[in-house]
Length: 82
Image 1 (cartoon, one colour):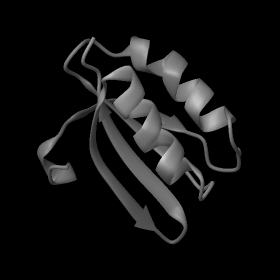
Image 2: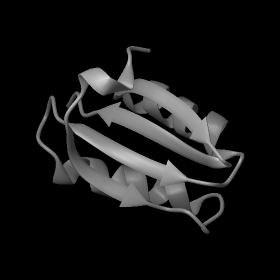
Image 3: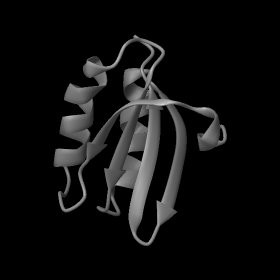
C-alpha cells in the first residue's frame, strides 16, 4: 500500500457507527460513484472492517491504497479499477 498523502480523494463514505456487513455493502455500491482510477475514502469504526474491506478489494480487483487507524476509526483509500 502506498502513502495515503499521495492520493486525491474523489468521494468519501462515512460508515462510523455501522457494523458488518453494512460498510462492505455500502462501499460496493459507492465505488461506482467515482470514475475508474479515482479514489474512494471509507471511514469505519467496526474492527472487522479491516479484514472485510481488504478481502472485498482483493475479491473485486479494486486497489486498496491504504488503511490507517486513528482513535478507533479506520480510514481506507480505495482506487476503482473497473
